[in-house]
Image (cartoon, rainbow over all chains, first blue to last red; front, top):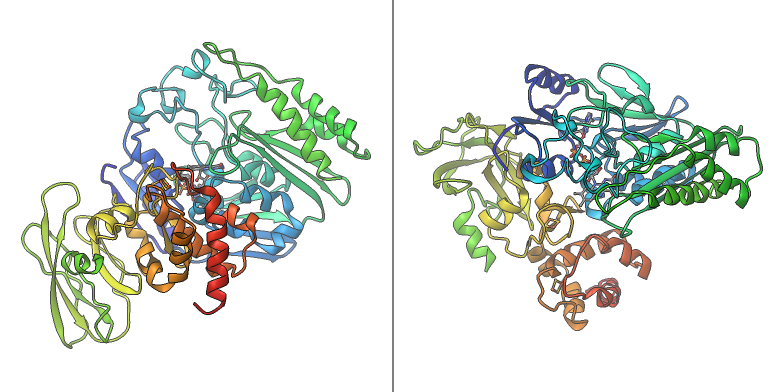
Length: 320
Length: 237
Ligand SMILES: Cc1cc2nc3c(=O)[nH]c(=O)nc-3n(C[C@H](O)[C@H](O)[C@H](O)COP(=O)(O)OP(=O)(O)OC[C@H]3O[C@@H](n4cnc5c(N)ncnc54)[C@H](O)[C@@H]3O)c2cc1C
Ligand code: FES
Ligand code: FES
């Protein structure tokens, strides 16, 4: 790693001020498990000049239930979410998603905020020393489109970038209708992500997530992840489904598009129906109708469509 | 063995003293390091410890005057060069060190302080061989900044070996190492599990150790080893 300036502010305002005063190549550091990898491999075209750590800001590591919401601080480690009894019992898909993220060690330092804001894992983007100066780095080519895109997008190409969002907790947070609270505003979690250089979020440079608010949930929810190994590996496809007590259905899959993908067509199939095997299958089929394949040099990502159908079937049945 | 090395290398290994230091650490120094002088707020006995800062480039020598007064952490502080002065414990011993922002915890503990049990297979967070306990959590030292451990309590396999000999015995009895390179990482992770769960099931052990990779394939024998260690520890060993 090259050297850089490191800050340990003790309030969110102080952190935001540092970010504002350093507009170029300054990044927030939460658990560091993503950003340290980015820095070790010299992935970005210009090396980060400063990191602003949130580690010493009190109050960002709390999980509490109040005012009709479950509030999870941005700096809560994933392991604490995975093992929290309240989350396990009432927000099962989130506990399961956190439990299936990365490895036990990475879950101890990796935070929920970092997990939802991490950069893409596209192997062209992640190649060391910025060897592929792609769209997400300000270049003009998506190398996956003519190369090996076996893990890439099956839902269109946002601004022609085929990379996918790798977060495991994202689909669970989407189906639980989480709100993002930053130092500037509060908004629905689906508005968090988008095409950005080089990140995955639409946050402003000096915008810091302080917590996530999930409306009190009584109903059933389920998460499932397909990866090469059960531990350490990123999702090939993952997904979550939540059905509220009043019958509202939300289904979301991730690692299939630039941002987590809401499956509204599949939701419409399930809503108001008794869940059966064939209904769950139909939901998957419906979601796959708009999927597209990238044929790279000798590779294809077609199998991901089948995988997504299977995952939707599983998570819908899990809410039975 | 490591203890000897520590003595040589550490800037402020001061745990064996009967007292802890106050905010009064003075970093006077040779010309090579422009360090900020943190005001010594109280009087008392002082001691000078010398340490060598060897991160990237020529060694720099730093002389530290430690003023012993009351039990208090040296405050986390930044030098003019952007280095951090951190105060932390490893295996029960206290250290005060100057670290670079880009320095990993692995570099600090393994290269500077001589805790050689901590290994690196991948250096990218993917194998668990660099695991240490930080405030009871199994953490990857290759993916942690050294500056972030200020005020924290670290345990390495060296320390766990003296605190939990039953775990080491169980690992030896079950032949848990072939080349042995991954073993300290497994020990640290198993210790973290046993501290949280005194009677883990096979599945719980599998899950807890799933982030530790072993190229020699010793996986199956870790399960009886951890179970035996759990039994022995419950028996008061
Ligand atoms: C070997 C390996 C395997 C992994 N496997 C998985 C996996 O299976 N699934 C998965 O989802 N992830 C995986 N990860 C990625 C990563 O470890 C996790 O996503 C982790 O949760 C990231 O959290 P962090 O706190 O360490 O993030 P950091 O590295 O600290 O931050 C990540 C990004 O988010 C931004 N950020 C962090 N907090 C905030 C905030 N409060 N406000 C605004 N921006 C913020 C940072 O600026 C940075 O760009 C893996 C990583 C490794 C190294
Ligand atoms: S060396 Fe740290 S996880 Fe592999
Ligand atoms: S014993 Fe050789 S790597 Fe595990």
